[in-house]
Length: 157
Image (cartoon, rainbow, N blue to C red; front, side, top):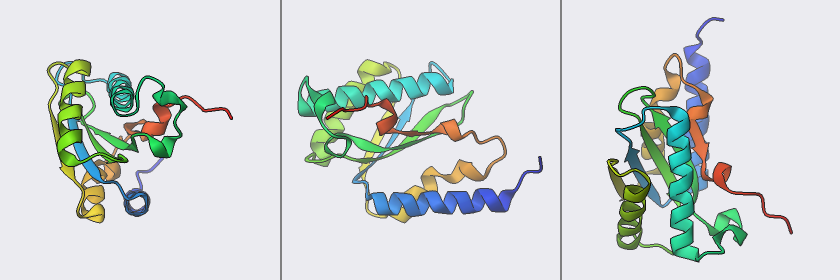
């Protein structure tokens, strides 16, 4: 199969448009210097989201609908070395100061040696373009995109 850069470029543009419509309020970068594996990073992202939701919503956080919880998308880069994730999150009822302190504490518990950087989103298209920059590269794996909803259990009515 031939590598089709144009197809990947169109796919990346669709992701940028999706993020613009999603309207995230926070942009986060998370590093994990200890385990450069995709599955491990995805597991840690799931744990982080659960810890954040528990801290914000209480121990029955799983009963909340996805749009009431930490909702977003992570783009995982540099699998195998210097692995890190860029996340675009929509967090209801959280200020930058509150969410920064909470995320720092919870990421340290999930990934002791990991680092993080949290910012408010002002330019959705710009930050989405940055987060998706590796999508056009040869070898990009669709599993490098993780929705926070992937980590949530289905709620039955």
